[in-house]
Every structure is written in C-alpha cells, then in structure tokens.
Length: 125
Image (cartoon, rainbow, N blue to C red; front, side, top):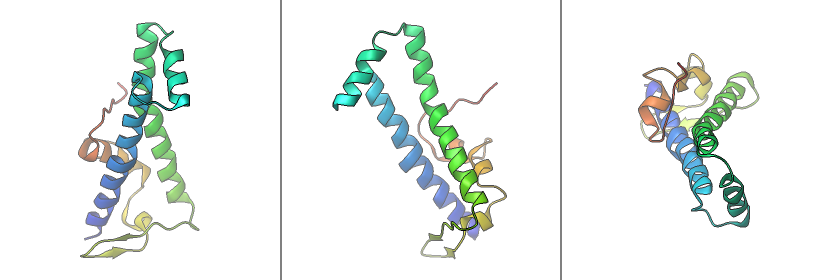
C-alpha cells in the first residue's frame, strides 16, 4: 500500500514543483512574465543568437531536474529530516522508508518524470 503514498508524493513533486518551475522560466524567457527582473532577463536573452536561446530553453528542465535530484538525495541521506505522506487510506511516516532510493524514483520509463510530469523531459543519449 505504501506505493500509493510514494506515487502521491512523486506526482505532487512533478506537477506542483517541476512543471510549475519550468512553466515559470518559460514565461520569463519568452517575455510573458512582467516583473522588472524577468523583463531584464528577457531583454538580455533577446541579444542571444537563436541557437543560444534554444540551448537556454533546453537547459531549463535540466536545471530543475538536477535540483530535484539533489533535493531527493538530501532527503534520502538526512536522517534528521522525515517527510510523511498522509492519505485517506494510509499514513507513511517516512517516504524514505518506502523507496529503494528517492532520487532514483525520477528516472526510467516508469519514473516520476515520465509518469507524472506534463512538461518536457529529455533523456541524455
């Protein structure tokens, strides 16, 4: 039953953190975000070549993914930090205890990126 809690956590992480962060930076880099800082970044990016802008665009999910990987690795390693998941059907006091490795949950065709994220994901070839 703890697989439900693990999937709930993974889906929330993908949709409410990963996807939202990528969407946010896509808005910044496309000029749709109107804060002063965002407009300054967009102005600087407009001086890039199309190839440089494409590379920057491709890097956005990679930077987000790396951040998530190291967040999950830290949660796996830091025993003083526990993440609990409370569903109607079960309570898991430590998400670490129901995973073979939290950072590894991100990857493969059955991983959280593939199953839960709606934003672009590019595997290294």
